[in-house]
Length: 266
Image 1 (cartoon, rainbow, N blue to C red):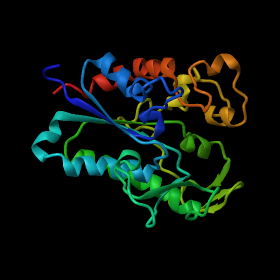
Image 2: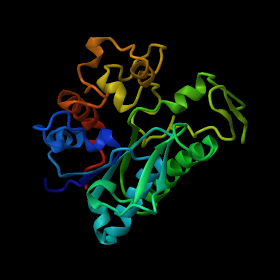
Image 3: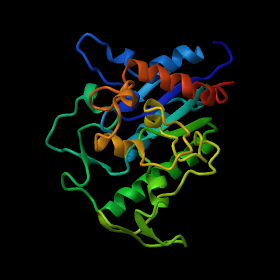
Image 4: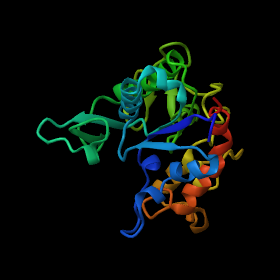
């Protein structure tokens, strides 16, 4: 539509989409596809399965670098962060495949602690650097943007004292599950660019398990999924591997559209 920016959505498999059956096209199984229909604008899907927050940040930077500066004002960004425990490693022994590797060529995705990866401190700091760095980049190039997380409630988990943390600057964090960490991830609370930053349950997964903006004090949805505690009626928007199905993708698009509409006006 005339006078509206094009939307670019960055993220992991929640953004890219998931093909649950061979007959279902992947472009019909992701929420950016339906977001385009809700908003009436072109939506460019830059999601990639397995992406870490560092890889997502790289995709944003690559898009800015490859787009002529005079064209950048024609775009708005939706940046969907992922699990802070994901790491990105380059595989020097594998030939890059542009169809599967995304913007980072020749990579291997790892998720701590299942295979050798940096100390959790590094992964947590990487997430914070990605968050703060992308805010600065969007400000520098005057790109309107919104941020959200696919399924990670880490800032919320920090406040639940799962981490024994000191709130003063540089406070040391002791994670009872993963050992010692040096940094608390910066909370997006109060960030006007983060969708519903004041709410605890503000992830994409919260939308599809019908927990969006809930005021109840309960376990984050991802933990329910991991421990198979979600009731069957709360899984109607999920695939078998806990990704949004077609109905879930439509619900995400409908829920997020009002937040995105405000940054599309030229």
